[in-house]
Length: 218
Image (cartoon, rainbow, N blue to C red; front, side, top):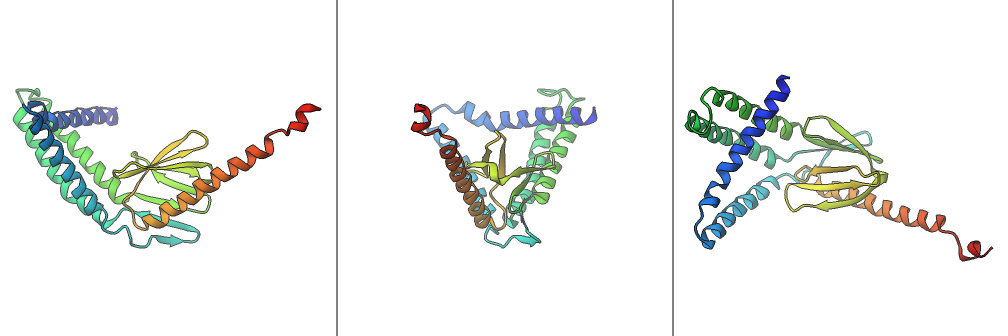
């Protein structure tokens, strides 16, 4: 029950933060104001992506037949610096809104929920690691539980252009992997090889199972 309540409070805080983020946009009176708003946030995103790149060329740790691709030093630094700042800003917003837009008795609980979300994010980034073997990939979920996927069923690898790449499997399962991990090039190359092998295998199976014309005429 406590976990559910904390999650609901966290959602409220996130929505409140999104509202505050969009407030300048909603108040923009001209097309120039809107363009400036998006250009500023796009520049901030690009800066964050460049910082997150620091460490992607480092070699992944190997044990037996498994490679461990942990998050880069860049994204860990970014999360460690920005998360406390976001908490301080969000908490200050809650204090200012207490008694006005937010009931005074609810503000402290929302602050605790925001703190919980920030702590969860730090734990998620610092503990995140993709584990790759010859036939399996293990990916951490947002709930800090690793999920296993068979690489023989990997059919698609899509770069979203942001922090994640999307994986799609023949069974219909989908997953996202954080791109800012050590040994990223080797990881992505291995995944692309499995996508190619899976596609070629599907084509060969299709040709084998396709009846010949002579078979139909008999």
